[in-house]
Length: 164
Image: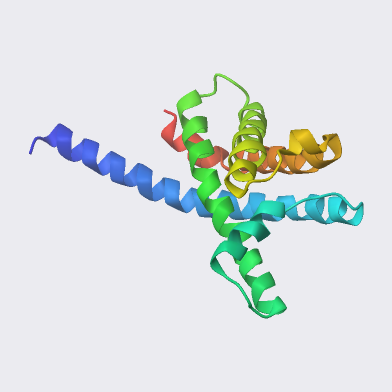
């Protein structure tokens, strides 16, 4: 094994370890940042968190309400951690060609459009939010944009350390 391949393997391991840690850190912060918006939209009678609940109901039925709500809370963070990783990779790869907040906002829009407005509704046999009207689209869209911008702003140190 050459010194270059050893260094390359170390750098890949370091990147993966850093990515995992930063996904949890910034994913947690972004997941928390989303919560007030979700509560506000719920208070306004708008639909948010629809597919988180539906996804859990696929795996867990007949649970006490408190247990189910605790699982929804845990699921919210796990999805946040997993969803943070692709954005972190995009931020590292963009190497400051675009402002980080705009990369985060674009990621939030694309994430919402692809997953929440197409893949999940079609997977569950539901009509798309676009078919249900703007009042179904905009709350979740805003929340996903907040998620992306939050990660972009809180991960600057990580991104800078791998963007050199």
